[in-house]
Image 1 (tube, rainbow, N blue to C red):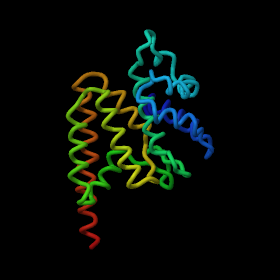
Image 2: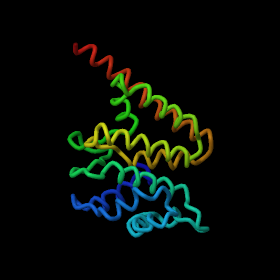
Image 3: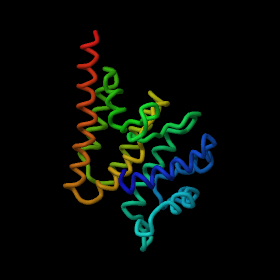
Image 4: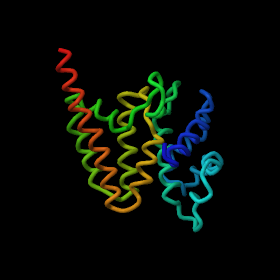
Length: 200
């Protein structure tokens, strides 16, 4: 796990509180698109307590770390709404509780022919931008789609935070992140179809 992954993991688990989530905080986070929103302040005590000092902003503008961690917390809050079971888990976890990356989960959804065209359109738009605000907005829509179709799937939002953090270090690095996402989204779909064909 990278540093951003570890921080995000700790914050999400703190908000889950062993099955007694802080619903008021999660509700505020869902309604606050950025860390600078007044509603987002409710998550600051948990979030800031888990960030390293060098991850904190000095000039009132969120750092790359703050931006990435907050975005992932918001994605988790969107997904967790109305769910009684924890919808977050690390890809590094044990087999029973292992999570999947967001794009592998979307790849499973892409296998449904009636969803593929609309989903592909959204993913292509996401992969075409290196602007982090646009990426976060696109990702929030994709999380909402996933929640509506497969609400109990466990997603590794900490890994997504690490990717968003990395993507802020210039166009070349953002393109590397996009390549990883594209591989997970397109290759997984091809692989699943091949496996299903072999079973039949």
